[in-house]
Length: 280
Image (cartoon, rainbow, N blue to C red; front, side):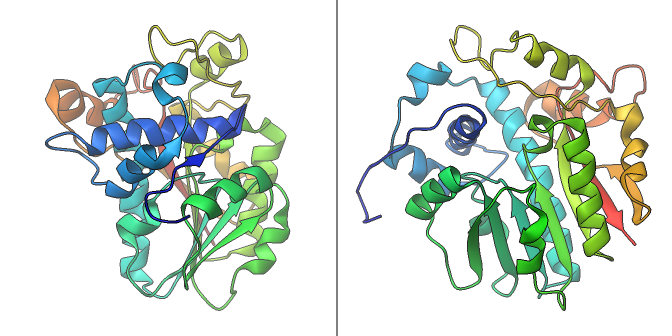
């Protein structure tokens, strides 16, 4: 896409959620003291021909900051991996228009983005491939994508905003497929609690107050207290632990939210949880 050229994007269902994520990430990045520096996201929102506000409603500072902090927890996990394995491979499953590569790349790692064909086309148009970054048009559930990963390099897999949209057996099969192939690697993923999943299945979860947009169904929910169940997906899942939410601005994100995950009585109230599963 040439500089200054706008690009019309038409998606629906689960693929359309990539635009919601981008919209709120860009809003937070435009704040005076953003919790996530993401100029690429701001640029994309300005260049994409899509009715963001008409579809998703006006941006919400609180919601946008929460979304950005969730994304930042993934960034921190990837940065940690690249510090330990600077020549490793990051496999991003269904990342949509996530711009993590431009935020955390170390100039040496390999990146593989596995996308559904319709979202792969959008990503290629707006975020063209680079020398060490490749887009593969394939469902994350088609485990043949594993054959595209160099087995000689350490591997970190990210599944940001993906697993909750899959059926529970599909989640189990995907985790097992990663554990089986990538010994010594890890999977970073996020999950919604069961109450959140149930509300989406009933069509009751609107992303923004006053918006006509309803979150697509999320069949897979996982409460924080159930996290160790992920280990039953495959014998090679050696460790599973929740990642701490980075601190943000204000009382809630600066003091309350970071400790919610450590209080059993309330940890399932938070809408998302980010975790890492390590493979032996």
